[in-house]
Image (tube, rainbow, N blue to C red; front, side, top):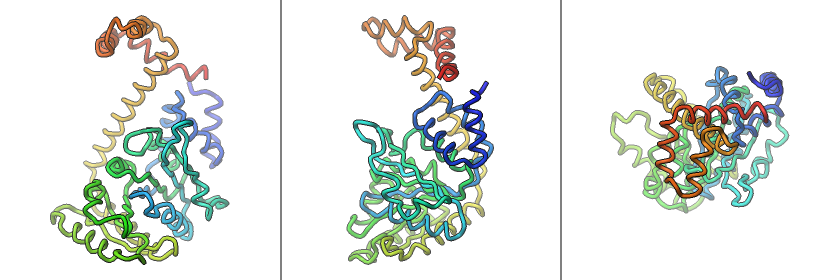
Length: 333
């Protein structure tokens, strides 16, 4: 049975209470044992937001561009959320870059919700919590959710699992399109942006990106658009919004039901493995019955981790105790 305090928080969330949204996001970030109950409760209200991923090399002007995009969508009367996924502090694990420092234009706008999320060392620049936070933002009623990720090359590929439209931002001095392809960003881009387009080399980068797009197989489906912007001067942002809209129209016209089914299965596997891992961690930390002896043997070096894991998995009673302890801990929190 769901905790009465959590139930009250969810009811406030359903009424549009931004503080309740913030507190639920904090529960997710802290990997509370209550997260599964929260997500199960709000899941039916998800699937309505347009989710954009904005990625690219550091210094490409992603934050400025996102700031301009927010302004464009707000001018259309849309509710917007920004999830800025930042490098972690090695000491606190918190986000180093401040969300409101970079989005000051919208700080007082009640139609904009901005949140920073530390990567906490997670491969791909996205913490385990990112997907669930996006669902909370979606269920809260935001029309557009923009995920801005750290620029770390190859690991940015995981953004495509969260975003419907992925925008890859580059700049003239950032190198040629070959570097983008080496990073793997060419494979996930739905829209390319050449930002700071007033600088030398912008036309060359645009031409190289357009060539790489046209070299794709004819049956590859959507061909990414290339847009020139000067985000600092608010130039070209309207063309970017139009390009994003065109990709959205393409997705609706070429809806792939099989892809949706596969995505739901991948999400289930991710949820299942995460839940098992977190329950096991909580159960072991709290001294679940049946697992103490195995943990003691591991500490003393009497058994190796692989043998211990196999032994625990094959002992169904001990495994049930471990996972059950990890599940019920929320009741006492």
